[in-house]
Image (cartoon, rainbow, N blue to C red; front, top):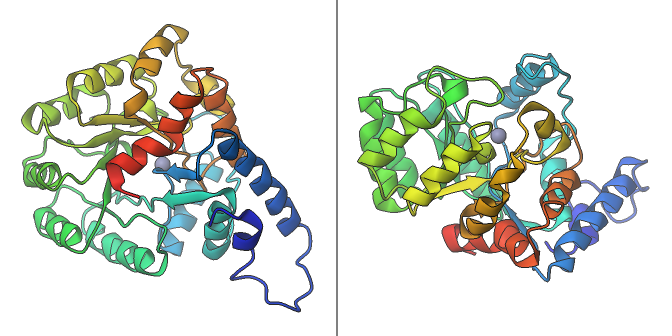
Length: 317
Ligand SMILES: [Zn+2]
């Protein structure tokens, strides 16, 4: 999977087929540039802990939401990788992404268990995908979260903005406790970007951490726009990490610029920052996220930790 050209073809072409027009040579060129990035750092590839794979009808709704201008960012949000699932997987493999997640999340009750069963099937047929799962505050939550952990889920996602729920909900207390005990990380979209929700921001999730201080939590989007407050949380709790998803890209810098004054703290938190991209739901090429990280000029060892080593330490090889 670290050989982009070999990895990009299975699944869509057979020996003897005529080469598909256009798209595949562009994919190869993009893969070569991404590969050059991690090879230049001396890495064996990338680990991207914030990518989305979902049941096709759910993903179609997510894409329609973004492309229809409903994301509240005041601009178009075209999906750069609006492609069939097998092509999206081939793209990531072509980029040299050794491990990636399949983050999914419900926006209403009675949906999470079904998403989790889809995610288990996806992980079973996609060995390089991290088995991902989710939850919603509802009476069955503790039951299906225990089941997902038992079935091998290695990463959870909680979306406080889309879900519109309070992370302190008592129906979630056992869930946070189980995740902490099992040392299974949970990616939490708890920042108030791109638009705030009733329970986003550092307040509510801080109370969850105060109750479950050993929780391994990954704050999505580097906590945008509350970057400083979420870096504070990482300073206070050893299990708190932040993912880079969309941070420092031109798109995000226009919405919620990262304050230059926080750069020394970002450098200092080198062991807590994890590469995330939001692939495929991004309005720019994958390489842009990597180049945006490199432009911070925090050094090759910072980039190696962020783009690979921290995730391996947290989630295994
Ligand atoms: Zn995302």
